[in-house]
Amino acid sequence: MSLFTRKRDLDAPLAAGARAVKAPRDGRNERFGRWTESIARGMGTPWFLLLLTFFCIAWLAWNTYGPERGRFDSAALGFTALTLILSLQASYAAPLLLLAQNRQDDRDRVQIEQDRQRAERNLADTEFLAREVVALRLAMKDLPDREFVRAELRALLADLEEEREKEREAARPAPEDGPASAERPDREHGA
Image 1 (cartoon, rainbow, N blue to C red):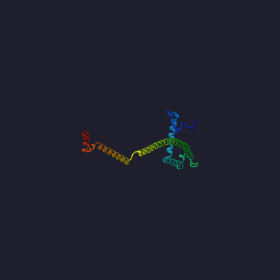
Image 2 (image 1 turned 135 degrees about the vertical axis):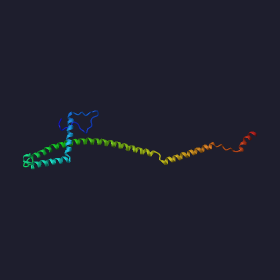
Image 3 (image 1 turned 90 degrees about the vertical axis):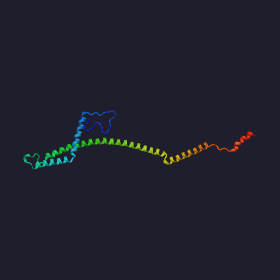
Image 4 (image 1 turned 135 degrees about the horizontal axis):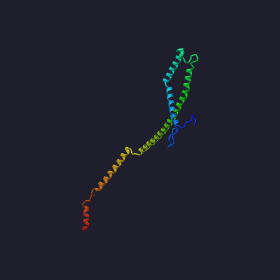
């Protein structure tokens, strides 16, 4: 396996039931990656720039104004040792920064995928709730309103009053025709 290929994609989920098996090398790579990120974070601070500036000023001052016997980098040669040290620092800083950025890109890619999945779930939930609200609104249209209920109650009350009136009429004794009707049967029997 090449140094520049990845063992697995961080943005692809593991298959169901599959477990991530880390080789000892992955643990070392992870520690190295965290170490490079900490260095990259340190190089990106104003304190690092301030310390590097003080280091260069002290170097230049010592090798320019210090005792002749104590100087270790000649100003006549253009401070060759300082130039080499700064070049070495820059040559290591660039790949460390790139490695840290690649790791951040991998984390961002995973985060974006998780955000996309969360957004899809939220959209599905929102659509479901919207359908439920529409269904409730349609159901509410089918429900009777206050005026309809009042009209139905008035109609029922009128029906009940009509039935009571009929019951009262049925319960009243039938009006007799008077004495003439009572005499008639006697006449028929008596004649």
